[in-house]
Length: 184
Ligand SMILES: *[C@@H]1O[C@H](CO)[C@@H](O)[C@H](O)[C@H]1NC(C)=O
Ligand SMILES: *[C@@H]1O[C@H](CO)[C@@H](O)[C@H](O)[C@H]1NC(C)=O
Ligand SMILES: *[C@@H]1O[C@H](CO)[C@@H](O)[C@H](O)[C@H]1NC(C)=O
Image 1 (tube, rainbow, N blue to C red):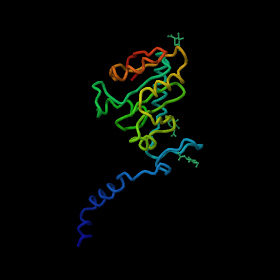
Image 2 (cartoon, protein in one colour; image 1 turned 90 degrees about the vertical axis):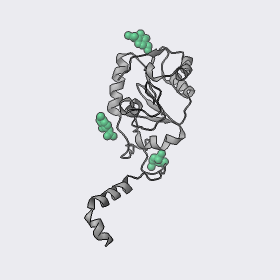
Image 3 (cartoon, rainbow, N blue to C red; image 1 turned 135 degrees about the horizontal axis):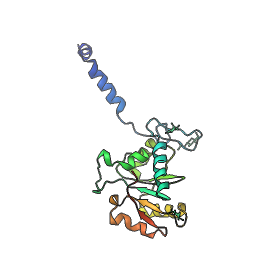
Image 4 (cartoon, helix red, strand yellow; image 1 turned 45 degrees about the horizontal axis):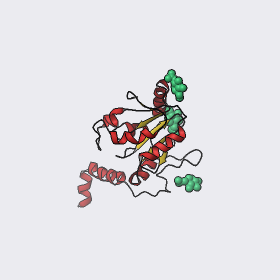
């Protein structure tokens, strides 16, 4: 009998149940599996990562280095698209694990720039420390930095994580862009 056979292998039934449970459901952007930062207290789904401690640690380093902003790209020092856990800096600071997206942290705000493939995932994984910018071109990051960073403030980044092509648009910043030691 089929049930008797299932009964022999309760672990298999459990595995199937876990598999069904872990299978990602289609996401409704107005549903409860994405964050809602416009209510008080904010609504955070269980998938959201609390990044408060990471941001405090980074901002302490920024303060020590006198940086107004710090840019964290998605890649590693080989410009890889898929990177080792050790190199997942952007995922560590934001909670967002998608393969494309750039984070920028200033003292009072933090932003993630990513493309439409990842908007829902970002809304599920990020807490309300993060603004989601639904744009990808570096020019929009530069424009944001020009608005947010005070004149004369420094923007820091780890030079090993930037190609010449990625760095070039930042030359439009009137504020000094400072090549720093990796901050962590
Ligand atoms: C957040 O919650 C408010 C109040 O319930 C609602 O009006 C708004 O549409 C929600 N925003 C999102 C992005 O779900
Ligand atoms: C996030 O973590 C910080 C400390 O790391 C804690 O103070 C805060 O309450 C946490 N926030 C939430 C929403 O759990
Ligand atoms: C820190 O940066 C500010 C500009 O934001 C500058 O005026 C100041 O001289 C810098 N301080 C040090 C110690 O480099």
